[in-house]
Length: 251
Image 1 (cartoon, rainbow, N blue to C red):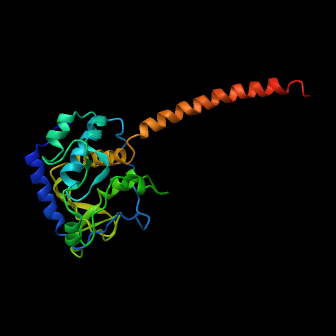
Image 2: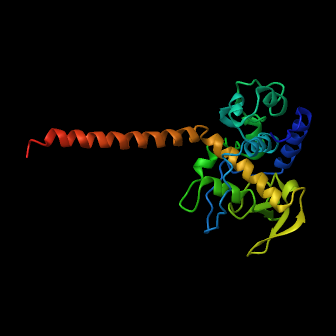
Image 3: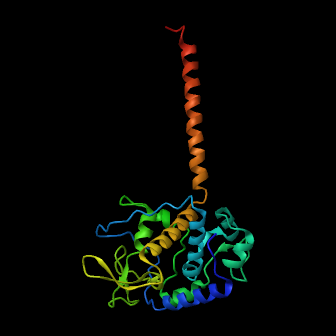
């Protein structure tokens, strides 16, 4: 398991990130599909890497859950990622949360609407909702979280290549650093706490967790699908032999 921050650090991180979000005077309630034919980078598949998924949930709790919920996921379900109930309680929950409760945000809807003009969206199905002909929902999120750039014309001071005129500020700028867009490509003008490779890995972990959250039973569904196809194949052989035996005297 990746090293998790304690409750005190977790609350301080969330309060700091919440302050940066308060700069947004316009919050779009859902991520829009990329327009203008923006290329989507393929998201690394971390579905079979428990450590990556654990890091992803830690990033979500530290940076995203202040505003966004995962109402379809209860805390105790995180045990499926290899975490113990004690690890979840110690590192990923507030003292008022209970292990069987859903992962709701720390902000009341009335306050969110007052501050942002709209309630930040629940991210339970965001990875599935963003799937399109140009790429998967994971590709969209992976590209989106890596293509924020400074734009002083925006209320938050940030814009995004995938989502033009985005209302959400770049909450990961301390990790990634600052980029600028010259009309053709993104250029880094100030480094962050992480190297570009480390930041891409962190984003991949977060996206992997959101993909898992969208359908925790995906691996079981795919496994069952293989067995169902094998069963139908065997059944088809017996059905053909039965048909052949039944009709042999008809001709």
